[in-house]
Image: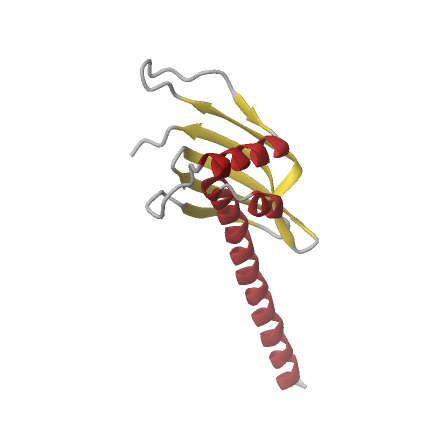
Length: 146
């Protein structure tokens, strides 16, 4: 009986660890879809990872004055429109463009991710919706200073 209990505990622990690892890869994939959607002009990647009620805003520093302007907002539709313009304008980013994903924290149904892209740094807040990780909120700052 003791052996069966130990075995069941080990199986539960391993399945829990596997689920956590799988969720980590799904969170990372959602963040990469976000970056690649903008880089490649791929609206399907954005639809795959953005919630329709997306709240995204950020700050852009003027290179000449060094001052940050007012908040810049982007909706779900605005994100798809931007990606469409990237594709139509032939403004896709090359393989050398920064594309970094760092999972800052992750729980059962929420995650926080920092991404670094050509435009700057974004902090993404994700939630798990029926086994799918979706980006609901983004705050960003640019341009990228390296």
